[in-house]
Length: 305
Image (cartoon, rainbow, N blue to C red; front, side, top):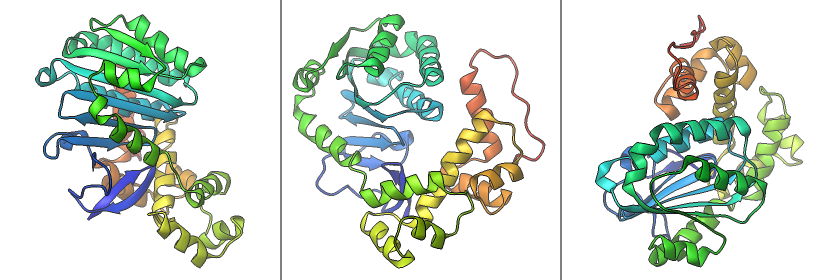
């Protein structure tokens, strides 16, 4: 058993267990992206990256991706740069993308442009599935600016998009997976909104009162949704800390106080458990990714480990 993330929340998962009633198997990282069964996906806060028998790769995006999310997308795209997958097709589904953050957009554009000659020769064909609108126009414009060596098509018809990448056989399964991933239960949605609005050190009883319910009822409803108040608070702390690590130079104790962790060591423990790294190493890695051409490493806060 271990903690996994689904729909942006943490939950307990049996390693190697196949999700019920779905043809794709959830794996925790890109390192476990291949192997039997042949159809797998990796889930992050604002996207899922999937592959079918290594012949088709797909990314579905939703919501309002921030820079931290884009950096995770970039890691996924690096998989396609492996010569082992030369000739694969790619489907980028942005139908549920609500907006594009300018800084995030520039980060992805810079990376893809820098790595274009590595991943483009491996792609036989790529299709961007969209609904139109400003956010989608930005993504379409990005691909046109990149001028990749492989053919790219832009499509509003899902059937035509899956056919174009030779993935008609997995269309129903991919669409069902997406529908399930985006179906965030109302109790979880309301709790996350409350955690965003309340002070970071808010007590469980105050959260329940804010939501107009009791602790027992709140815990029961969250359990029915496959999560818990503890898991949701941990996820909230981690996400808040990630943003501050990228945008501030706060030391560890100040950072912990800002996000509601009980101490700096508590925050380090959470990062080691869920990211397999420390807050300090996370900050350095993000800064390096944001400044791929910079010649020097950003200064490290004295108390950040």
